[in-house]
Image 1 (tube, helix red, strand yellow):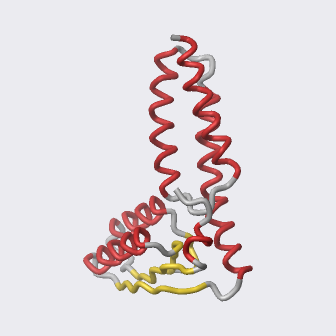
Image 2 (cartoon, helix red, strand yellow; image 1 turned 30 degrees about the horizontal axis):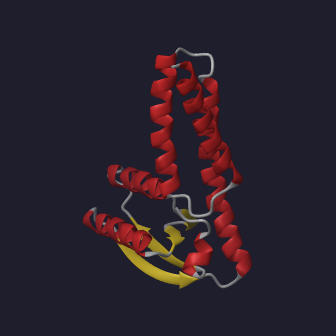
Length: 163
C-alpha cells in the first residue's frame, strides 16, 4: 500500500502506448479489462500510465507483450510529469475512480445490516476480497478508503457481537 505514490516515485510514470486491430474484438476487451484491474489512468487514446515502481513497470511490460502477441503495437515509456499541476490532475483522476469503488464497498457493508448472519458473513468475505483488490491499485488513497475500511470493520464487529 502506498500513502502517496508521487512521494515514492518522484513524479515518475510508466506509460504504455498501444494500438490493437479493431477485429477481432476479444483482445481489445481483454486488454481493457486488464488495464482496469491495474488501475491505469487514461492519458490519451491508446496511452495509459501508472506511477512508476518496479511492480507497475513489470505489469505494463507484460501487457505490452500481450498486445504484441495479439497483433498490435505497443511501447513502454518512462516519463516525468512536466508540472505539479499535471501530476495532481492525473493523481486526482486516479483517486476519484478508486473512491467510487470504495463507496461501493462501504454501501455493500451497510446494505446487509438487517440480513441474517449467514448473508452478512458471505458479504463480509466478498467485500474483504474486493477491498484487497482495490488497495492493490490505490496509488493515491482518497478519504473514502478509510470510510470503506471502517464500514467493513463495523460489519465484522457486528458479526462477532452476534456470535
